[in-house]
Image (cartoon, rainbow, N blue to C red; front, side, top):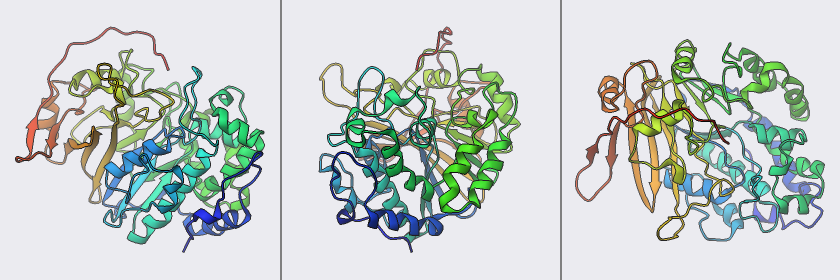
Length: 432
């Protein structure tokens, strides 16, 4: 069994931080073959799947999300960030898979806004946090995996000048060189070397897109690359990944065809996909100034203000459920200061995608937390697809079931609210 990384394994680093402590690195090296398994997960292995993405170095945000979803034993909250060494997978969350669809790193934006990272090593602490959760999840037949996003690839695997400005100022001060930062982070990716993850033919998880950026063809090359990675030894995994990201393969982690094309065009392509539901990050759901799937679906769901934290967005529904899910809720404080414009109080609003399986997708929900209250919004379940479709007031290929049946826990019995039809909006330029 893989060993936990303990607090004594990782003393507070000094500048320059050039490499992980020897004992900690040895634990990661030993764990890699234990944790390594195929990207293609049998559909009967897990009964519940949760998905989110784009942490962007915000350890407290992802901690709050996972705690609200009941996946971890405690939240970091306002405690010391080094409390991560005490957090474990919730033992009641059995037969459960958590997937984070890329962009673990880079907690800074070009406008200068950054996550709280006083010592510069929050990315290392975040990866330790995820690693320990993975080890403890396996004790109850559960699992945590993350895939590679464009930020992970361009600033950790390679040093692409386009994304280097997104590295936190404190991280640059602590590591001093990009090579030192990579040396401290890459061992975690050797233990979790996924570009994409699939669950039978039901689900595909990838950071940006399963199609090339022109929406011309599916990226079967990325599956071939992932199969090669699956059989590569610890020392050579990073080289294989870097060598493999050529041609259209890079579109899988660095393109946005699902929001840069009309909804009808996207939905027609997704209907032909071998996967019932494709889950992606990379496309912020609080950016809604274009006439595409994300904007259309948010307009139908006026009960949630996605500009105050982001929503999980689903679209392209048919009798078998939604075909696309966007899980980049812009959770990182680097993206948005969640502040109530009236009271100036900090808003903690998050959503995470929840999928229930029984050899196939049986139910799809958005687990929503805001101001300490939880709300499971069921957007589709088997034998009820048409009912939920009607709730949205939508028809046609781009029709979504994002609104669905909302079941809120109250002092009374659960109540159901339904969403309303809204008018179309004008197309504008997309801004990221």
